[in-house]
Image (cartoon, rainbow, N blue to C red):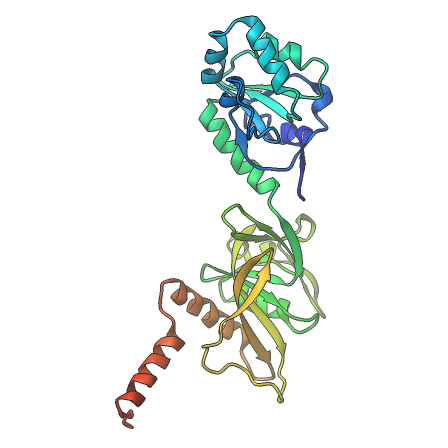
Length: 316
């Protein structure tokens, strides 16, 4: 399970989110495991069933106005009851001061309390985007990721089969490299897979016999991307005379990454095959499928229609 320390969140986002730590330094070691935010309105009213205590608790003008209508003893009782749960931290928005009853109840608890100048809705939106990225499930694969005609093509195959050389040819033809050798993959909340390269080797490529080259320096900024959505998996393998390969395109192969199924095609390699052109066509064909047109299926329908009607295509 992915997690994020409150201290890391604060250090990375204190400028953007205008965060100020006002209490609870001993709660900075606490960890977040969910990217969701909670406004504890019902909890402040005394209803704790389904209380999402594991989320960041955001208190805005609405919540503080509600508390001002209650007596200090009642507010103190509410916060004491609320902090019986394992709350990770509080954020007070719009530059408002934390209620003294909250500060008192949290004095001996490992709970960080922050203040922000941002409006509540804006803070929640920006914080959610950040948390979804930091807490997204992730993995790494040995392969090459290239942006080909807007399609993120993940090229897989055994070491030495020519993935990097193929990617280099694609870059030379005007496409963009995202990652070579090792691809870091994250799954967003929308079940979209985003690929990127490790920071140390980002924009670099290893070509056997040539060594390490920097694609950004050689081909310019337009030849690279930092991140790209993965939409197609291309598996390169050596040509096997005893294996039957798909010749019509009707077989729908899939490749599972982080419980997301991606379309997969297998391209056998042998001398004389122009691999980069085949990958370009595969990317364009994937774009066509996304628009709702499947060439192989349409051809199959036409062929079946001719056979059912007793028609045969005439030679020209």
